[in-house]
Image 1 (cartoon, rainbow, N blue to C red):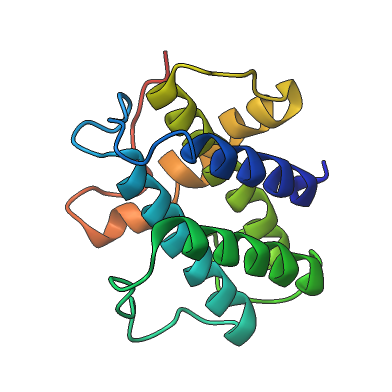
Image 2 (image 1 turned 180 degrees about the vertical axis):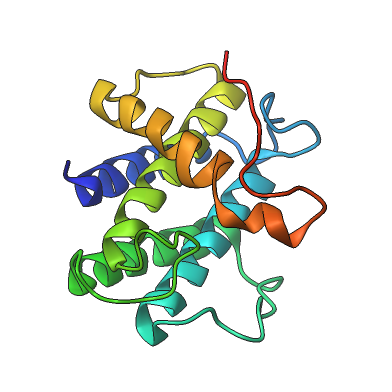
Length: 168
């Protein structure tokens, strides 16, 4: 699957729909506006750019993004993420939260899913939901199962790994 193509297309659509109004509430993220959601995505993108640049989690994180205007920041972060993923390719060794995949390919996949989920969030806020690519949606189910539900970070809290979960 060409995850980078999905990142490009889904992030463009997210930005396009966000321009319909940053003040709209996001039904799937109670308490958030489109502005808060777009800022979240921009910060996620900025984090992954640093991960790909250094091969490690940035520390300290996050920097102060409060002075940034939402849409120009998102546009810049979006372009920089696409460039960083493209430059890294899929075989660069880097930090990930998936012990089974410590390559930049993990971030291609993760950012495609992160972006499509939040594209849908923004579309719901404006009542203009469009379909998800069926292949990406199917792969998203796999990603939810591992590493999302079955990932090792559950050990960091009070839940033992692996997690017992029912998927309906």
